[in-house]
Image 1 (tube, rainbow, N blue to C red):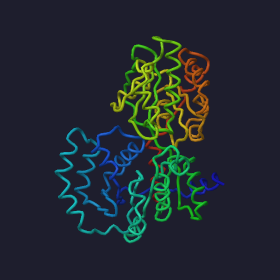
Image 2: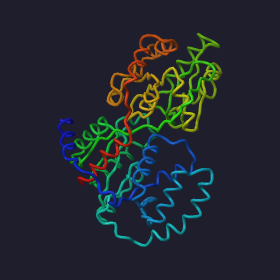
Image 3: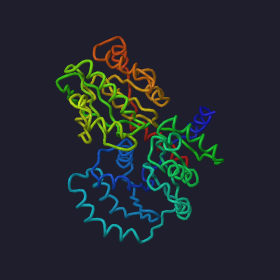
Image 4: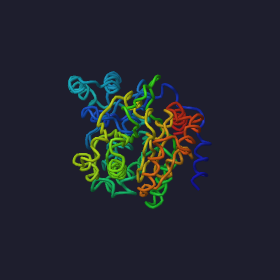
Length: 401
């Protein structure tokens, strides 16, 4: 059923959006993330990619609760430039331009018929969103990254399941079209719509791309073999499996224990993992936690690793898998449908619950065993998803709306 629906959607995607077609893009998430100065998540990277692609013909929307303001073209361009290169003076520059921009935005402008892009889930839970979209005759297009808080609430903060249900309900009620980051996410979304008794709006699954790697990547070695995992330290990422594994390795190998590099900020529902990072002396010499890092440093650490480790319980896409394969680094991952969708049979798949097999496989990847050599040979023909392909598909889809 899914394949039939997708082929029907694809057959309708002809032509492209006119290059001068006006677009409104929601940048609220990028503003507060830049204000906080945090390491960009996968969702943040998608928001930035959309801003880079559509920014030259777009106006910015900023929102707070039920207040939504569309900035002027000039103010939007100033804000876009700031968001694409925030720097250390971001807060000061934003405060300087804020009052005037917001005051001018209060002057209502006709946005009838324009495409409104919200690709960061920002404000989708607000009760007044569908009425706001209808009142302004906007063609709202939302990018749905996942339905994890609905399908796996045990890995999210309390209350996030109902909050996300409201986001998805509002999206289904007000969208002219929906984009998903994977076929897996679209399939889950279709199931949610059916269970809710709601008709799914026109939809298109378009793979997102990883961070563009520098032209020259300096492989980091750290003086000893290392493995790397990338992602916010949260329950569903299953860092605890890796930390327990590294404790066993440290007990067994001592000073010859490989390094585990954890790249990501501390999140939620991961108290045990965080406690081990802070208070387990056995693993501390062998684990490097990086809560922020420059893109070139992340690329170097991935490129120099024996493998990327992704033991997640559930994912909507899995951008680090794409980035690692693009850099020629083998991947050991949990056996998730979306990983098989985006990476095929390239990675080595292990159940996210099988700590014994994870340990055995990590030890094998310390050397050049047959499974690691298999991946290295197969990686020569790997072609990563690109933003150019993503946006070509998205542009064709938007033109049908």
